[in-house]
Length: 232
Image 1 (cartoon, rainbow, N blue to C red):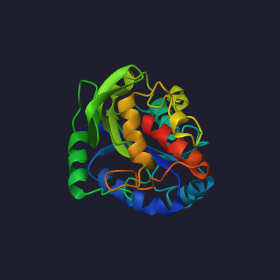
Image 2 (image 1 turned 135 degrees about the vertical axis):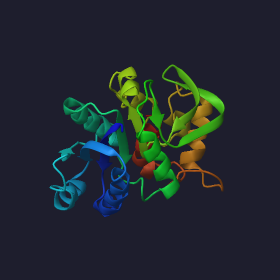
Image 3 (image 1 turned 90 degrees about the vertical axis):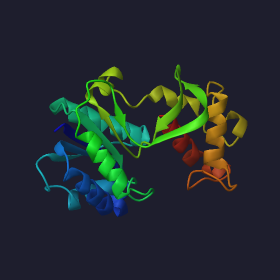
Image 4 (image 1 turned 45 degrees about the vertical axis):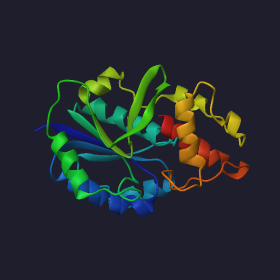
């Protein structure tokens, strides 16, 4: 059976037990070698130490300063994990994966089945989303991406990425402004920009972020953070 390491980014104490239970259901069917739980704020730090610390010697809790948001936390967790372990897969999660989406038994079983196999090529496991038209980002062209509240990356894929899944330079593609015409850099592909503007700021019926709302001075910081995370 393939070996798996876990990295989970935590923010809110209220999500802690539900997230832990969902991860336990995954862990019961895989060979988990080590877990790194990354606290991105004080509330989660207190909760993790009160509820999770001491559950297993193969689980550790580290602090992060929230730079790079969840992707900065993912990177901090990966760096800590690979410093001491070399698993076949790294399962990466945000503490909202079991609350903001439907983490069904079917999804879990498919994930566990894939994590059981060692792949000798770069591979990623997760929910695939797509657009009808392709776009370019950071010199790469695609029409698909993986939903990143819960996904896994194998050893070869992480090596192909130079050990990085967080790219700070992408953050410059979003400007903290309520001027929609200047919010995204001209370097953002028009196809991707159109998709993100609908996803983040539309109030019309149809697919969009659960917290979408028109861009205004009072929500610029929140929307800029979300846009940067999506670009990651």
